[in-house]
Length: 318
Image 1 (cartoon, rainbow, N blue to C red):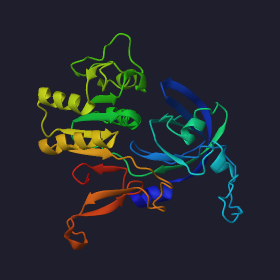
Image 2 (cartoon, rainbow, N blue to C red):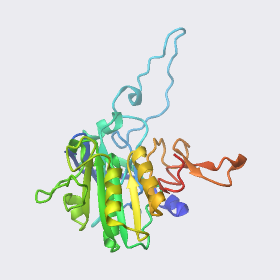
Image 3 (cartoon, one colour):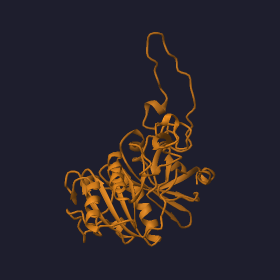
Image 4 (cartoon, rainbow, N blue to C red):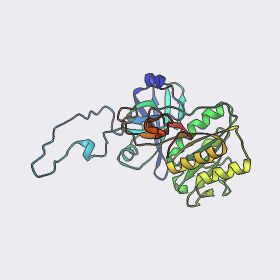
C-alpha cells in the first residue's frame, strides 16, 4: 500500500472553484484539477497557503553584535507561511476532471490566508498522502467524527454507502455554531442522541446521523463518544460492526476504548502537526504497540503521515 501511494502522489496546480464559509470559523474549499491520482477516504493533501508559483529561497540576514537580527522574509513577516498545511479530503468527484472538497477551520496564519482565496485563483496541492480507511466485510459501520475530524467521515460515508453497508454517523462539536454541516429543516437532531436524517450531507447517502454538542446547544448534550456509547447500548450490536473515527485525541481514545472493550473493530484517523507529509521531517510521531521493540518497552514510533494517518485502535499507545 505505501509503495503504491509513494508512486502515485505528486504536486499539482489546482484551480479554486469555491471557497465558501459554511459555519463559524469553517470553510468548504473546492479544488478543480485536470487530473489527480486515485485517492481513498482517510487520505489527505498538503496545501500551500500562499499564491502558487511563488519561490521562497534562502537569503542571508545580518546579525549585528549584541542585537537581534531583523527578519524581512515574507514567510516570517506576512500571512503567507512557508510550510504546507495538511488537510483531509472531504470528498471527490471525477467528471471531466477532478474536484476535491476540503473543509477547514481558520485557526492560524495559513488557514486565515486560505479563507481569503477567491474562485479562479490557483493553489499548489501535494498528494494524495497517507493510508486510507479499510472497508471491511462487516455489514454495518458507524462513523464518529469530532470538529475538523468530521470532513473525512463525509468522504468515507459515500464510499461505504456505495459498498452497500448499513451506516450511521455521529458528529460532535463544542457548540452548534461550529457544526460544519447542513441541517435538514424537516428533521431534528435529537437530544437523546438517536440518529435521524438530520444532516443533509449524510442523508444524501441514505445515512442517519446524530449531533452532540458540549454545551447542549444542538442535539445530544455532551461528548459525542457518550452519544455513540448510548447508541451501542441500545442497539446491542455485536461483531458485525466496524467503527471509524477522526477528531480530537481525547475523543478518539474514548471511542477506541469503547470499541476495544466490546470487541468491535475500530479504525482511527489520527491528527498530528506535519511539516512535509511524506516521512522526511519525522515530526509526526505516533506511539504504536510493538511487542518486539528493543528493551522490552512494548512500543515503537510510527509516522502519522506515511504509516498512518489511519491506525487500528488496538495499536495506539495514548
